[in-house]
Length: 344
Ligand code: PMP
Image 1 (cartoon, rainbow, N blue to C red):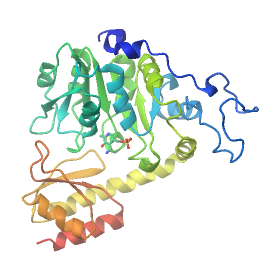
Image 2 (image 1 turned 30 degrees about the vertical axis):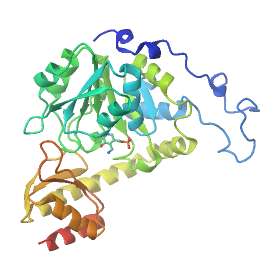
Image 3 (image 1 turned 45 degrees about the vertical axis):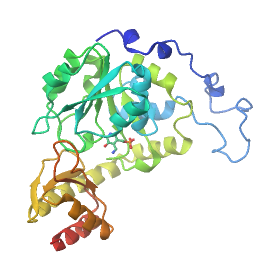
Image 4 (image 1 turned 45 degrees about the horizontal axis):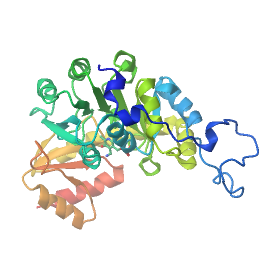
């Protein structure tokens, strides 16, 4: 890996972060006349902890990592954007990613005016390690990967990810948004081996908290320090921090949801396979399935007319004819199947 100093944008390397009123005093008790808050309407009148210490300690225990290696953001979309702002000089640097994959990597690149180089996956949706490395040059700061990948649903081979981490001298972002639904292990416990690895996870999927926005980035503490300098001081509100804390205490509920979703996923795959217009159901390690048909748009529009919304992915690379369907509750899945069985 190139030294972090060389990978960072010069303005970020030299950035003096905003110092908030709550930086200097960390206790809960006191007369707080430092931040121009309103003394009424507790507890919402107070700014949240900008360092999210309690929640980070909780997540550190949950994930068995050190709290200094955790960044918390407004969904994982926030750290995706911060990766660009930290490492990529607009108009000069570039990133390399896979195609197809989650659309926000490209959108965040476009917003930040950073060149986004796409490398096709293989026909079986795996990484083409040599092609990815060949697409890099001395201005490539980051490689974005997503495993299990969206929209293909599969995990990449562990050795391929390791090869990229070893061979590429910049940052590798590994988005594990769907890791709780995958049989394979997260790369979290390998963070110590790879100083250039940033892992993204989220509370939006397995934990059922997309509405309150909490994403995580795990990386070596030097990278996390830089991310924390860039973020808005109070990027996580009080309600999100409290609610997440409570849900982590109630982990059995999340595990139960995952069990239900696994069973529903198996059943959905079995049922969808029996439909005459479904040509292929791709293997999935996520909470969605990808199916191939001859008339994706017709099926999509037919379902919308019945107020059932799935995702048309037929114009995405390697996904001609494909529709992506999230695994829902037993009731939602049976509404979907009833409608699909009536499609002629
Ligand atoms: N990564 C992937 C691969 C996703 O599919 C999504 C959401 N669809 C996200 C990240 C965004 O997650 P969050 O809600 O944490 O911003």
